[in-house]
Length: 493
Image (cartoon, rainbow, N blue to C red; front, side, top):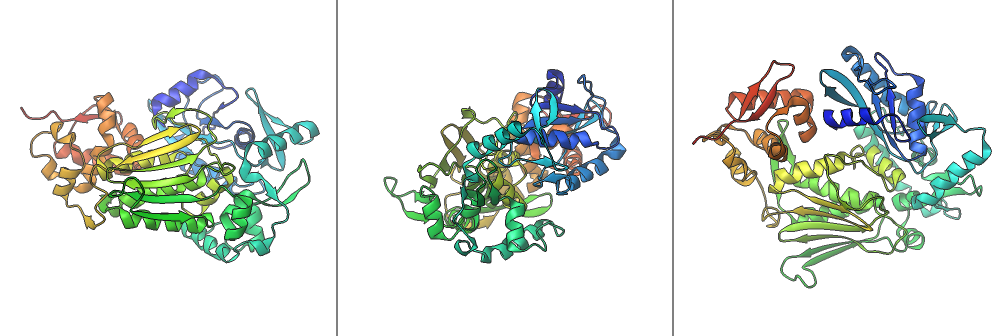
């Protein structure tokens, strides 16, 4: 999210999918009523630090940390929000004012705020708890729109892999040692995760399709979701058929492991320093491909989902419940979860990032890995294409030195920098610069906040990189410290 996008949202006015809150020093109850109503309707953008007229007032910088912490805590307090939501406020500097922003996606479950049901009507959050026909209509919309919520009343705990429950608890605790699943029984965890559900139109109670896909025994999954299978292929030598193949039809938790292992077996692993840590960028790319094809596909169709590794690319395809068509642009991408229960579950166990981050991460890490950009094309069939450019197809492993990073990563960057500068840069600095290349193709100058948005790094990391790159001659700077801007230093003649 950029300052320009915030200004555009502030100029559009409040409505069905946009809400402003002043919240200068603290959160108020209306924030959570809006979270509830957006989740129950079409989703929406909420801006804190903006008044009802769209004037950007800003949040008190001294209160930002507590507001962000309280927001997360209240969304995980079932007395406040049920079922819990995993959302975070993003901090954006808009001409010196701090605005806190969050996108609330539409959910597949009805969300309650303080045991009340709110729906979005125009620019208002309306309590419909006691309006029976409106509440029933809301439950009906949710059940009809998301096939992951289809209930199978004859599936019992005997048809599930309950041995997986302890594993996912450990995974959730690895992400958050105080996670709400910590001391829950298997059934309590299922209910908390929304995979044991109730249809208020019919009175049906039971495990839904999301729960069966996550925990079901293989034969139960085949019966309830006969179209579910993921086909992983390698096509390098035998391009008409395949060199290697893996068919995966097991639960989503173990399917993730099998698909990650398949990609690891057939692609080159390259390690880079990211924030001074040695990171497998290939693993991050594989994580986004695999989690996307498992979390966001439409399971009611028999279209065979596939991941195909070729000499010059990896691509994935899956059937999709599309709300738009065409190539996704990460600069103005609005996330739209196709299976919110499964997406939330993967987020809890650390196999997916907060909504929208996956697209940005895929762009970020593909540039680091191969110097190219991925393509994400939405339609009835969702396609993700990651270029390899000869880097990821050899099947061996290794580590790039700083000089190798300079040679491999940004071929375009050599023409943009003064002579000998690349030899002074660390691999992390080269990776940081590479993630900014597309920005510099459009604009000459960049601010710290824009660099943070483009790279996904923290404020402290961005400031450190900018300072170091300027001292090494890669950047030129102008302006005072608070409003400083940077551009690539001009190449030597």
